[in-house]
Length: 283
Image (cartoon, rainbow, N blue to C red; front, top):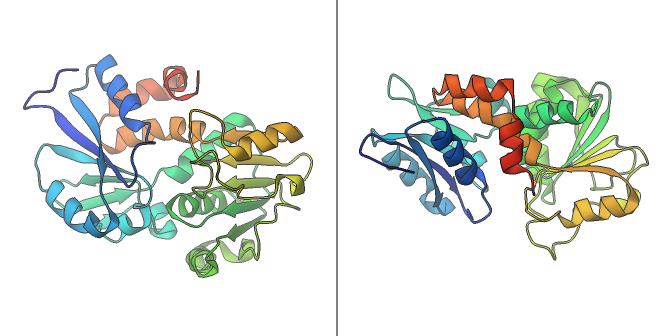
């Protein structure tokens, strides 16, 4: 692709960033649809995040940032304003400069996740859901699930206080459908969602005991790796319906593009996401 002095620069900020798929996807879309923009990965340690955001967003040709692990929660605190879902969840995965110069944050992980469940035909109304992990991804997923009207939403985190903090943010909005799970035992739930990082490495322990998953339940692992995660492999061996996080990212792409002002491209892709799926899903 050709980069000139007029090219709008976007960044995906995380630590690590070796696993991110966004640059290959968005740069393909920019080139394919004649958008003069580029997305590059930036490995930024947590201690440097505040200074990096402040100085980088001061550059006039920086259009904004995608945000990935572990910065989604910390990024929310650096924003001048956020959309409602980001405020409820306490996390941000998209950052832009507003017309008044303010730094604005939004959260699309949760919206992408529940839209992906619609695509897979997984119902939510009245269902019992277990979310494992209360980091940035878990915060977004939990808020979106509660917003969609699940019957009960239990949140488990190895550090129980973190799960309790998330429940405390969600409960005033969604009431007693949200609770802290005492363990990651998946028995009794209709949908189990792994929002931890367990699965990025092939030798990671399973986030839940797959033998305890109820027959007929669904599992979603939001981790996106080229090879199925250990959780997905274990589910396949038991015949449990399980999905990786690719569709979650697919469904977010038009939302990101609209947020960054690329409305024509967003509408084109929203009408038909086949091109995006062909890029994201493992061959």
